[in-house]
Length: 174
Ligand code: SF4
Image (cartoon, rainbow, N blue to C red; front, side, top):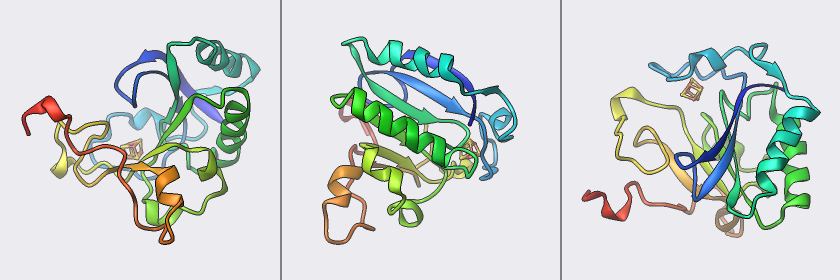
């Protein structure tokens, strides 16, 4: 797996303060994507032990709520296996921390991926410029969904997402 950045104390990509891993590789090609530099799976840097330790140093801090995987697309074929192994290690080492995952794919296509057992919240769907709204909570366009993965997978019908968050923050006036 390759990556572009590890951001720290991030407040924009999930609940609380988080460490965010921005992976390389995405084939969704959304119009007006804000991160086209991340599309190439061969771009960025190799995700090595040093990068992993950089993440663990953040997760060691009590005030860090967890990790968010973004990109790029962490579910791109170039990333899926390594992301799963990293999630597994994180859940074993930091069971109290949450894992968020952003992907351009839709829940209906990916709910049965093995890595989903490690994910707490999934933000799904391609970015659609015609549905863009800067006031949306945790997502860029209105078609995307912020899904509570644990609650959704506990249901009989696992393809029907249970939402983790409403479209807008309660105090946004919408
Ligand atoms: S899924 Fe995300 S990174 Fe990929 S093209 Fe769409 S907006 Fe860009």
